[in-house]
Length: 299
Image (cartoon, rainbow, N blue to C red):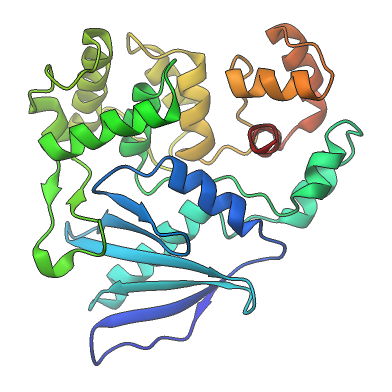
């Protein structure tokens, strides 16, 4: 639900994006800020800003500011077209997972006495989505077996090399570029950016498949079909597929059992950290295993 618009005259749209309570806003913003791509995303400690390419291929910079007192997230963007506005709002809600049912999710996960303290300590923890499925998939590939900070640095280099610079009047804070399209990335020379040759080949193959329309990385796509197509790309394995499923395909039960953060979370819960043991214990978290992952990472 979104209400209230200070609009029309200055083209600046200010809306209140309401959500079911509770919302762990600080943890949500922290997750996004730690992964913010230079030039595309900025968090100033209060507001998360980023660029978006609209359905009509226009560049828009949005600002999202949690306002717990009003039970909403304040959305701001300069958009004339009401249809474009509705689409960008929908994407923004998906990014912040504002339509989740936190009471049901927290209740189900709290049935596990070992996970219950984590859930009660951070009620309303959301599963951050993605502005664009292709962008998220590229980010997942870059993040394979390296730190979040290193992956973010590589993504920023890609944006500088292959992204589209925003017009000066469209920039907000440090938001200066759009993330590259599949067509741009498929053709861009990226060999000197510090990305391994194998990952570059994987990114190019992914870009070609998405650009041709042979692979759809959208929320409404058939998840199993997408997973099979992703696993067929050399350089993409179960961890990457699970991460893309969590955030781009919006699968609430996606579960990267081999993830280092998940294994560390199991260790701190006093549980075995072998992948087989993790997979077995996580069965009790269905159909919300992706949200359980967020609690493990948050811890």
